[in-house]
Length: 315
Image (cartoon, rainbow, N blue to C red; front, top):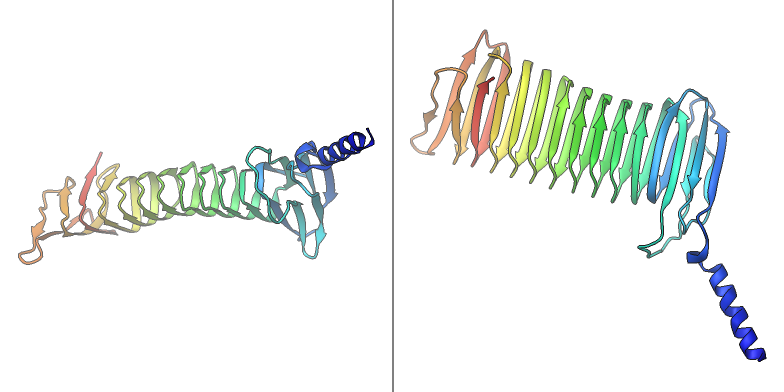
């Protein structure tokens, strides 16, 4: 009888102290943020929404990861750290991650890190850097210096402005309503953008791009094994478009004021619907080249491909 009672007691203690039996901890904390402080946000997994507000303080509300070992919410040197600490080694698939809303001053310098966390950034103006391994990142009405990177996740940007970098290895990028300067980098993902940025760069491997561009000063696009469809209202200075095993469709809203230098390379075909100029076929390389000018030739348009078609036209 005593042995049965002891066994039951030990079993009950094991269940009560097991991390899987502990409910997610609720948090509701706030603190003044010292002038010039940087924010360091580290949440390994779950859902995290980061909002800008008009207070000189930082706050966090929600629930911690079920495996959480506690929340760090304090000034550490020149940075204010918000971290949901997890064990160094853990393996779980069913437990829920963090579910947090974080509020911070609109103008900040903030670094965000995650492992399998989905982040949302809203109404922040400052220097924002994110790094994620397996999770999506969404930004809305973010201004300033914005760098968003994720290894295996999608990036969605809405009405961002400033100097913007969007990078993912295995995911799609959807950018709508951005302005300023912007660069995209993708491997094995598709790019969709409707942007008013004046300086635009994109580097893509194994993914297609559909770009709706307004009045661009400088455009630099490179693609390997992914078609590019580019609609361009106007070009002021320069456009460089390069592809390998991919087609390029460059469509202007009207007749551009530009000088064109197009090289079809080995296996490439050139289609010109802007003027009557026809490509010349190289006798030895069996490749097509085409040079022509529209208007006064104010801007430079250089396009090259290896094993792909090039089509330039206007609506």
